[in-house]
Amino acid sequence: MLGIKIYGKQNLKFQEQFIIVANHNSHLDTIALMSSLPHHLLIKTHPVATAQYFGRKKWLVWLSNLFVNTVLIQRKEDVEIDPEALQHMDSSKALALLEKKLANGHSLIFFPEGTRGEPEKLHDFRKGIGVLLQRYPQIHYIPVFIRGTGKILPKGALFPIPFEASVRIGKPQLKNSNLVEEIVSEVRNSILLIELMNNYK
Image 1 (cartoon, one colour):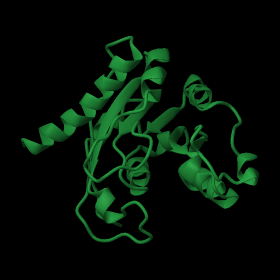
Image 2 (cartoon, rainbow, N blue to C red):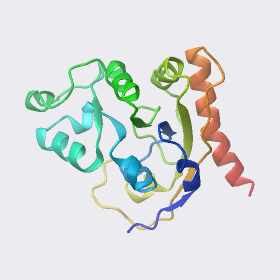
Image 3 (cartoon, rainbow, N blue to C red):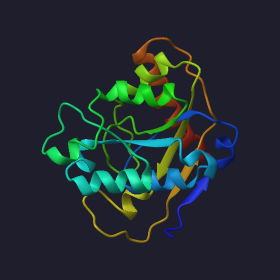
Image 4 (spheres, one colour):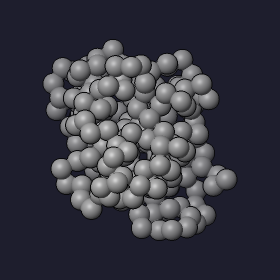
């Protein structure tokens, strides 16, 4: 409906389990990535979201679970979470909850920046993606660079505006390092490389 162009969908066809890692500028990012997945993978793929936003109200938790199959994680800095909403969220620690999904053969959509940043700017990554890939070295990560969604629906906006946007999906990769910090750097560089290659086309 918004005309977001998706490139590299073939890179998702032959992966039954994966962790998609992408930059994050808009709530549209999750919808765009979910729409790029083969239908049979949707039920076992979970976007990872913070309870700071989607856990504020019980109805937000319900909607995110119903329509997007979200896994909500509560971070230390998350505040003002509806107590009733917390009853509908797993009480496990964030990483333990994500590891449980991976151990059961499910996949994740992960935004390592941790929050929506400025459009087309890749900020520092949190170390969670490094920990997950360190503990599950057999799972491929799929780097993705998203451009333009932060201008269609920027942070704080209620309604989208017309703007050109694209999602570029890279090839599945296995991590090379065994150190968390190096894995995080490796993943971040793989996302930057997608955008760099696009700029030189």
